[in-house]
Length: 505
Image 1 (tube, rainbow, N blue to C red):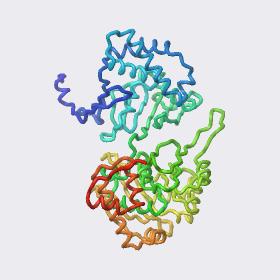
Image 2: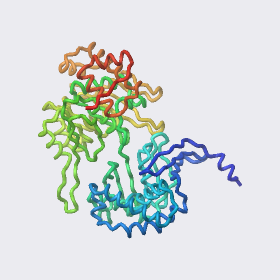
Image 3: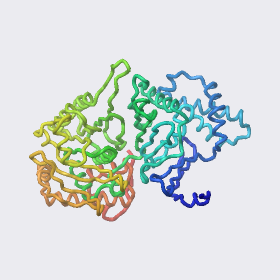
Image 4: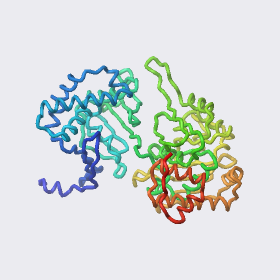
């Protein structure tokens, strides 16, 4: 029989780090036990013992609810939510002082925040949401542990469990009410989002046979930029520079890829390469894109119908409306239907630069997806599209890469110019630029040699930005915009390898 010491010896520590969740210090420990197929993610709330948690969640939570009398509309109104939180924190501190007179102020702050999360939020799931290393949080039912998708270690079992199916339902119902929706036996499925922008899907038993479920896909607090993609090895600098050249010269591009491959993140990175003197309109199901703060940008999101079936605003409605707002660039979260695609390609044909995402695994499939049902765009319309960027998530290696960059030929086919090789983890040039070179020549006056020189120049700029850790949306956006206005100024900094002095307007 194995001793406790033997069991400990079989446990391998993969990572350990700390973060804060609403002021609560939290430690995450990721371990792997011999014989188990997935790592374990242990969430440890520092400074709160299990006995204290029990008192907080039973006795003091009930006191808090009784003491803070609020109308349900106040709790559900996003505009009033911050004020509601302040009232809860103040009341929680009074209750804590009453029950623990000798409690130190810093400890009181932590316990009050914990009470708040367990009264108005999703309990300890809130701590998982605060961990920036996690991409997805999943409740499959109350019997199984909560699962989390870690950026480095993939899927992990956590040490958290939801008490029962009623609590899972309560969490889903709370999320639904905050966005004016319902989830119940008549409407057992929910697609919604948290105030933080995180996407939420929920289903109820018996639609999900093992119990009620909640899936939270986290909104990135630190959006990806082209430099962070290069540093992560997601994209080759030469491919990134060619895409930059296309965006500078107002060519339309589509980003395709499978679920979770990073399509929206890459669309966000491309947006940072748009000149600051142009009007940008983004159209999304849920707000995910974050552009530089100084850009001329109008973000728009769809709206679901209310319980009476009224008030719906579709992606198509927003696209048609966007064309009346004199945009220079239009970014579309995802194209799924024929009418949306037709409006998008019509916008390209009328002189707008459009960037969008679509589900497809490679550039050939992207063309096929666009020209067959349900999207079914006539092939003749594809001549307005210049290039396709394919993003790819390799689950076994747990990496994301730009798999292909292709131009769209005059025959509406994909000519792959660059492709990532899994064996070497390198990008190889496999095709000769033809129509893309013609289009760039038409709109920029550059011949093939000058296009190569332009790409090389941009590679140097991107290399300098990576070396100096210019990774934030605003940093990348300001340098790119300054490069458009005064390229010699940026190139001088690149040549001398000196840091850039950011001037905030």
